[in-house]
Amino acid sequence: MLILVMSAGLAWLMWQIFQQGVYGELRQVRSEVTAAAQTVKRKYELYISQHPAAGGISGSDFDVLLNTVLSDYDGIEGGIWSGSGGFIAYAFPSYGAEKGMPEAERPGIEMLVRKTLASRRPQTVQLDRKRRKLIIYASPLSEHAPRLVVWTMGWAAIGAAAGYQNFVLGLAVLFVFALLSGLWLGQYFRRWSMQVKRVEQALSGAVTTDIQPIAETGEIELDRIVAAFNKLGNRWKLAQEEALKLANELARSERLSMLGRMVAAVAHEIRNPLGTIRLQAENAVQNPERQPQAMQLILEQVNRMERVVDKLLALSQIHDARRSDIAVADWLKERIAAHESRAREHRITLTHRAPDEIWSFDGVALGRAIDNLIANAFQHVPDGGQIVASARRDNSDYVFVVEDSGPGVPEQDLERIFEPFFTTRSDGTGLGLSIVREIAQSHDGQVKCVKGEIGARFEMVLPCPK
Image (cartoon, rainbow, N blue to C red; front, side, top):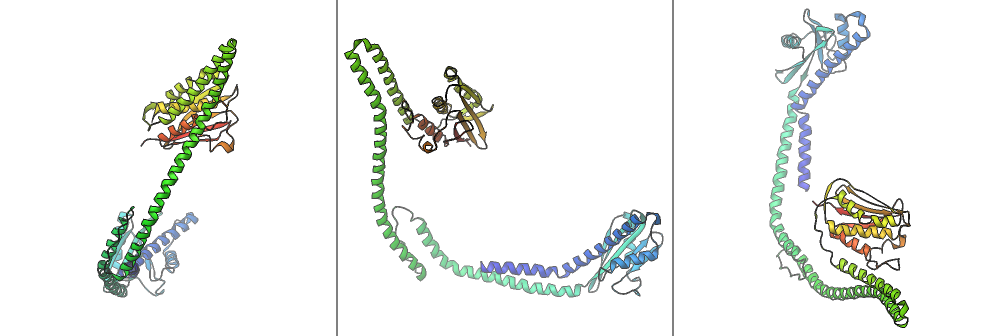
């Protein structure tokens, strides 16, 4: 990395010095002669706009204009050429007022300005003069003076700039030497790194339950690491055996704890109906006149136990989502229709909204989840309340929402309402929302309860299939 940084620094330095060489000198002069001519044009346009009645300026005024502008450009000379009068103004403030029009360059300048006047476009020419180069630039002066051309020129001292080129050559030799040094060092360390790679391969394959010792490499520094690793491997095996024993005991404890909670919940859900059935049966035996009422209560408790068993079976039979293409608006409408009679009975407003789109999900399983959420809402919404079921697409997710106007879920129960057999109602099984959660997870999604605008709000967020 150090050699790479040094090489990059040398490359940057060579480029900066090259900028000061022949190329940089020519570019600098070309930029200055162009800028000087453009400044003359702007000054002329400014004068014309401020003195429209003058109709232009005279030859002496051109001399003043040129001297004023070119005094800001060291080493740049220039003039005005007329298609009818030839060279009508000239200035070279850097040299002095006594400097006259350069006769040696007159033919080249005249040829360039004639070409510019004919094309009405700026022209540039570069002429070789021993150890210098002459750059001449010409441009039409103004639309108000169609026969006038402004020209500027400057000299590039390429002799001095050539010295920079030699310096760049020396830096290039140093740059090549640095690269060769890097290659030599790379080859020198390659043999050592091969042993490092062998150790690395052994280490990468050692992340298993059985860490094998690594053979020595013959390199003193590496062998110290190998010895430390082999000792670590021995300690790792002992720790892993102990951890496996603890994990088995913990798993067994968790299974027993979960089984105990499940048995206790099921026993509670079954014991209450059985107690009622026993009491009613005894009353029916002792008092034959109450047999019809007792049998009715017994049937209700049997139905309650059947609901518990059905929901337990539903919870155990949830499978991976079997997706199919479904028109979500029609599907949600069918789910709502199944609950309309109950809504009318309790004067509850039951509405829905969904996009007219085709989605991919398990319609049967998700229908059971929506039914459970609506049934849960019915249990908490007072007569005359409102239940809203909706579906929408949120970026790459399907979002199903059931919201009611009930009192909402107490904050302390939000984390427990999806646990099996958790319920706050004496006639509830506590399995409906657990089934909803399992169905959402079978779609790789999740369900949550949040505070809605009017009451409780249950949201199922399912990722769209790729």
